[in-house]
Image 1 (tube, rainbow, N blue to C red):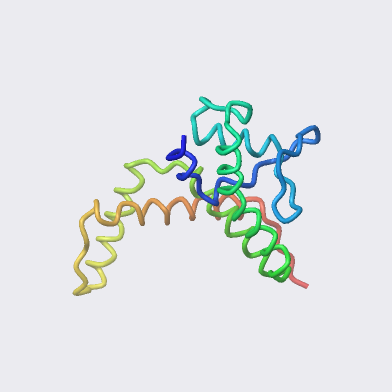
Image 2 (cartoon, rainbow, N blue to C red):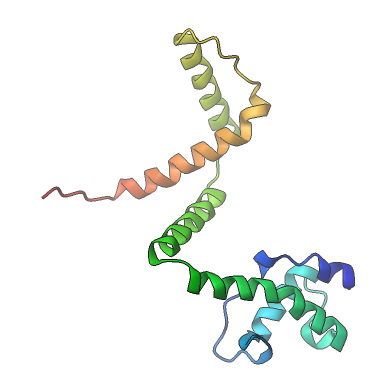
Length: 160
């Protein structure tokens, strides 16, 4: 159990809190609910353990692992300007959309061939890396283009 709890990262911490969620601990006065700990345990143990299964020592260890994310979230709320918060949320949303966008192998190869053609037409001395080397970069670029394309599809721009 110890090894599993140690692998809990700060990124797993903030779960959606239900209205009926019971407070199981506090960190500097910030509430950690049963919903949050059950969510973390579900991810950590793949549904094999619940809060009630843990010993007092394991419960304390889990809360200790969850505490940094609570502290970071609270510090971010206080320490970031409104613009910085908006930029962070926009960046997170964009990352989430990119990760959820499907790009086929065929789309990536087509983009790769297009890139090779542009480099050749430009008579560049730049060596074209192998497809496998740039595959992930191409995938991310195509996903970003798809997300932006979906956003721009229904945009209404009015100049005044």
